[in-house]
Image (cartoon, rainbow, N blue to C red; front, side, top):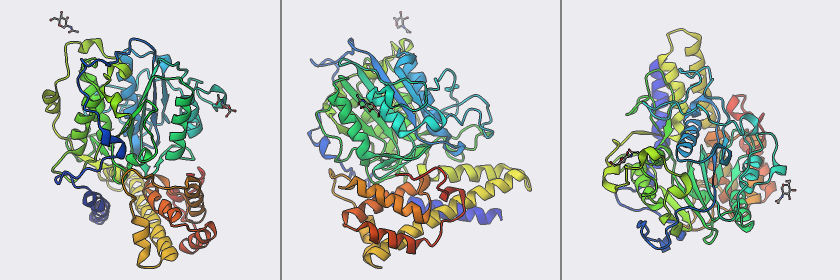
Length: 496
Ligand SMILES: *[C@@H]1O[C@H](CO)[C@@H](O)[C@H](O)[C@H]1NC(C)=O
Ligand SMILES: *[C@@H]1O[C@H](CO)[C@@H](O)[C@H](O)[C@H]1NC(C)=O
């Protein structure tokens, strides 16, 4: 049985990572740049005239982990780490708004109850993290209300919002699963790129910030801003990946460096730990956003290996000559540790990584492997692996059939997989995209974390002008019923 499972998991991981690695061409140096970056500003010199030391205004931050479940340990761990970093930098608790489901620290799977770590030898990052929005209060609606500073729009939670003024600086950091044009949430619905960009535009129109920096980790995270975030909003964003590739978890069981042996889950994400471990050790007055972007990009790409992703930048790239101090403050203990490119790069050995979308399997598999023979735990882990795999197969197959029903055997896959040119948004009609997702889920069950990868297929169906009636018919044909597995359940609602 064990070798059978190994084969299945190995096969699956191979299948999944195959296309990802084929899409990438790191060694050839072909990195797709967003149109916004074409007028790239070669900042980097903190002595230049318009250097903004953030002397005026308040620093605000929103930290948000979009997942729940112990197999997603790393996202909430990233967010807790970011909180500690900002507090050490001098931000006040009242100015940092934390969204996290909060089911990790006291999860029965956590080997160190009440403690969360973000690297193999890391300290507890959970202590003192405020519970602003936890559990079912981690919603898109509350996230948007917090950005806009609109208390009356909140449901539940601590009531903390970004109550900012025109001289203030805002830092938003999100980490989780995603897909083309979408970011996951532990509740439904998910975050759609169009809506997020509308909220950012609205925030800008309200004149309640001087500049805003958005760090985003998720699969296909480039698609959230690609062709959607205009210049001129005083917003600078970087993303863990471009619009068509996965992002990566790190400090995973069986990889190097691996978590302590009692941990059966990844502890962090590659892009996320790259920026945080850099910010942790430097005097942030001496390092600017551009320097950090370059460094994080190098560490996240991890050339000469099949994993890693292309870190991207969007929006007002000229803002990237601002020092990190403007957004993150700086830890006085680092005052003598000036940022020096070369030294910083060699600080950490290249770490191995796991595709975001395989991290759940890694967890279930490691749990299975370590559980005693014949124990209920082993049976449970085996069931979890099987359920996750069968959900993936169901979703992948259903989408494939859908494409063939709508466009024919040959053209189906071609239409579904088409990628629009750089600089163009994923889809023109976002309402169509949401309607199609709901239609699909009505007949085929929840897309769930894994299924978000197919968002481009739904977008392309919209772009091809398919009518809703055709989609209803094809979905009903592709999925005669919703599978019974927990991943397919619509109990949490539609993802759109
Ligand atoms: C705040 O949210 C409420 C409820 O959604 C809405 O009616 C109101 O217009 C919003 N206020 C602003 C200033 O956007
Ligand atoms: C930085 O270096 C100066 C001069 O050597 C020293 O006085 C100071 O204590 C150091 N600061 C920190 C935070 O280590």
